[in-house]
Image (cartoon, rainbow over all chains, first blue to last red; front, top):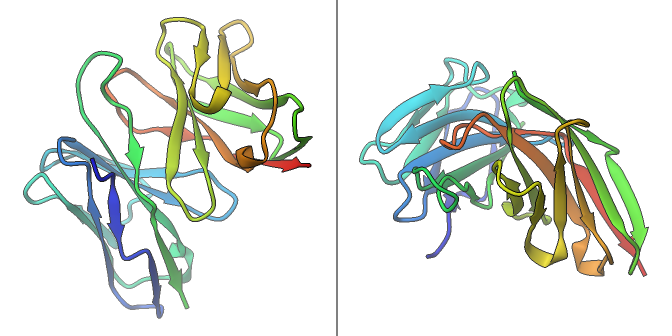
Length: 117
Length: 114
């Protein structure tokens, strides 16, 4: 169990550029979540997948944001035409879906910190 | 809709003192509640969770929390603070056991002085 990994850890970009982040979940986990955390706030839910299906999207996920999990393993989050308001920490989490006390605990990665200049 | 409110954005204690971090929730259905800790430049780590079993929940690193339905609270406590407990703590709620989105509070930064 190597934990949830995210790449890159830091990204600095200019306003208007596109950026893509990658998340590799824990290998046996079938659910994958994306959250955004701005300074002084708790994480805010963006979207989640079960296997390759995107099951829920927050209204925070504007049409400039797109997430994929093509083979039900790693996921990518792309932001098009970045804005300064997109500057935040983007967190990925994964879990094993099921009923019972040992399921559904979300394990978080270290995050990707995005700075839009 | 579910929400959580963490009272006090910053709590300072002395080493060895009681730690009390407050969380109140709002939920139209019986909630599932969590406390996470975040150290600088790291992801969130689960401390403990309430999933409608015992109302007093014990977690890692000596932390515990008590679910009080009448007060809609899920406060986090630790009898004796260590320097290593200094971090940011988040309370979170979710709808059901099926593991949907977590809704987080704004967090409480715990400082521990020697």
